[in-house]
Length: 212
Image (cartoon, rainbow, N blue to C red; front, side, top):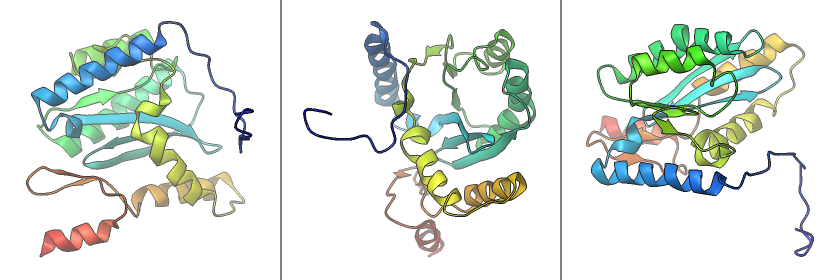
């Protein structure tokens, strides 16, 4: 950055990469592409998930079928707290969206997600179908750029949420919930199952075309 005379707009500390991190990233990506070669619709079966902080800790899931959540943590995010969210909100909501269709659940390597009871729960309900730290598919650590939530969703939503001023946490939560319900651009599937990922067209255009 110094050589190019660039400056970071908002400096942020991140975890340093370990020596074996590049290889683990490659292994995860190779598994993903192998599955895509076997099943052209495999990307539509993954539910990506992540948490973000808006002064409130928020969980969200994203798949080709839309957003799942937002769900709020009302306490410090520990293993038992995260497990309770999975059991009471996350998994039931995913099953409501996918019904009887197969899906894969992704989470990263946060300490709460690595909790023994969390891994045991996912092994029980999603054998061979969850991606994460010590999951059937090992999610590479220190890789936030691999999920659409990190490289698109959170930035988009924070721009919307922080465009307004909030006097109270209750107002902030209300704005977050509103912006999650009404995203202007999104991923959809047409009736043939093709993935429509053109972010330059508004959601209502797709709805209009599908009703013709």
